[in-house]
Length: 239
Image (cartoon, rainbow, N blue to C red; front, side, top):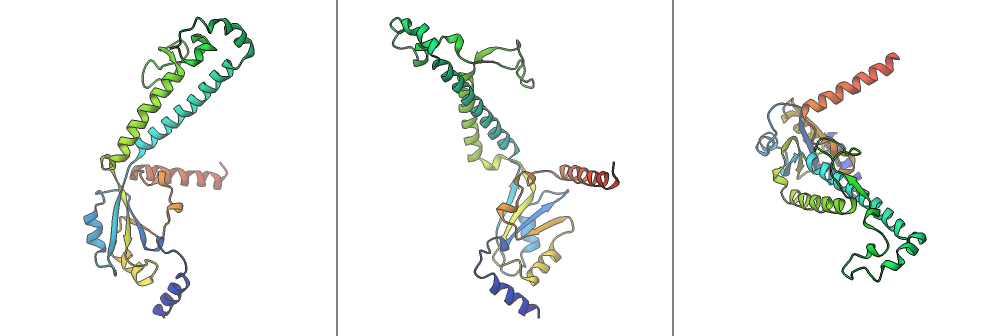
């Protein structure tokens, strides 16, 4: 009966992509760091064998750099848009019309339409842990500053993307097998050979994964779980 069920299910899924059916996500809530050797030791006897093992890493610092760079790009677009709007002002064109002949040819194009004081400026934080505050910190040209920061982040992001091995490993991994894990006999064998501290998730696709949760530590998982249960209890009891 089990063989018939497996055959029917395989035939039903033959026309569909089954890449995800051979993928297993292994995570450990706490304890020793997951390793390729440990995973191979527990699953080496699974029918078909293991195709590949990928230990996940914490890319939180890279994600922060991407968000900060995107914020600088948005600020740069706003600053340049305001500069263009000032340069397009007809009244300003009449005021600065007579200055074109006296301006040196090596001057930037914007100086034909604007004075230096018209360019947007910002205050730099006095300390790295402080936000920008009025009248505190050095006053700099906003456009030049944003361009410099974007270029710096581009270099740092590119280097990080080329050296993934420098990011710390986390207690989760993607394991791809050579056979379909939806086969009941294989699924039972995997559960039987996995340690109790391991959490297994089968048939997961990239679209189903919340990637920001992949790199969270065990104590962050405990905090999230406690918060969710507390919130559910409060809503149930009517607090």
